Length: 181
Image (cartoon, rainbow, N blue to C red):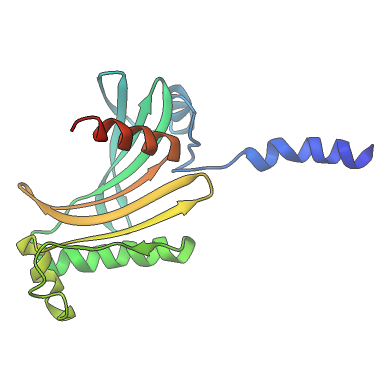
């Protein structure tokens, strides 16, 4: 009987975890505000999705920190790092973030080469990034979350982001995108 009582007491403690900056998936935007009373969030809402964001410094980098809520539940957290225009400097920042992620999670590389000109010349990876020849991507799945870290070039420049996603939400998003075709 004592073992059963101890087990029942332990279960709630084991289920309490943080998925992203004090937040666990499924919590509300009110929980976010309660846990961060000194932060003034910018909140946007569209199509049943709310995004609460603020600026911060993460690993010495200016970063937009975002929290995505669908159906009033926290589903994704993200860091959108202010990117350098210089490919070498941006890649250095990417590697710095990658080291921190890999110290905690076993991230798996999944780089996408659009042109292989510089693929075998590692000291030119910054140039390849700047030219849009490669997207550096790494991913982790486990502990009830999916983490994707990437840097790529888009029309506005270099885009460096880390996303912590509820796997169920990620699956819904993939399915919704597949329905677009």
